[in-house]
Amino acid sequence: MTPNEIEALLPEVLRSALTDDGPLRALVAVMSQLHAPVESLLGDIDTVFRPGATDDAFVPVLAQWAGMDRLLVPPLPADAVSTGNGRLRALLMRAAWLSQWRGTRAGLVAFLETACGVQGVEIDEHVIGPDGQPMPFHLRVQVPASMLAHRPLIERILEAEKPAYATCELVFKTHSEEPSR
Image (tube, rainbow, N blue to C red; front, side, top):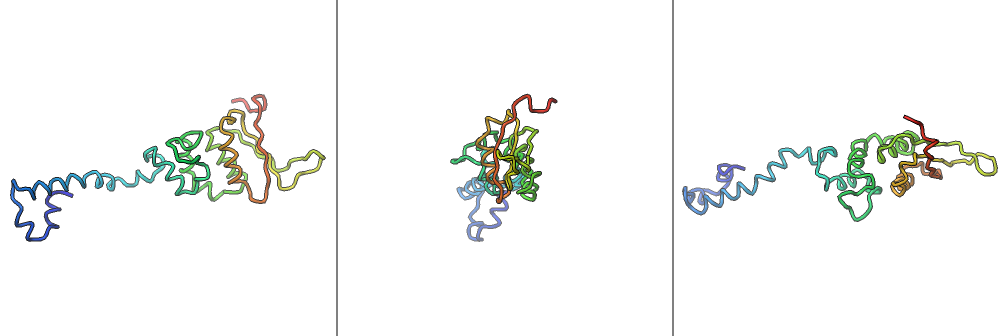
């Protein structure tokens, strides 16, 4: 608020006491300066809530609001996900789509690939057990070996995002099994 806008809000008795070099004029100027940072923030408030534009420290808060706090490692550090805030930002940008496809093969693959920033996740829904018979309601999730460093994150994602009725196993592909690019 400008000093003139603040002065307009003052009662008439205080406005009449405003002099050019008086203490009340200085107080109004200080009040105006105190409002400036908040007004600047409010003028550009959409950047606070956009995952790609917000401050790094606020990204974990957005993740909590989007229901992705199950991926975070408490207490919330600045780098709350093992793959970094950049990947967490990417997940937040896709949060609506990922929520819509939760519990599906496409959703699980997209979630894992977005969270780790690596392509090549495969899900086998027709797993053959040790007895040679199909294992009903069991998934084998095969991820590239380059994702090994993020195993705890992958396991949290699988537990939260797989279909509730299914069990799953995580398999890291060897480099010879990964497609060449």
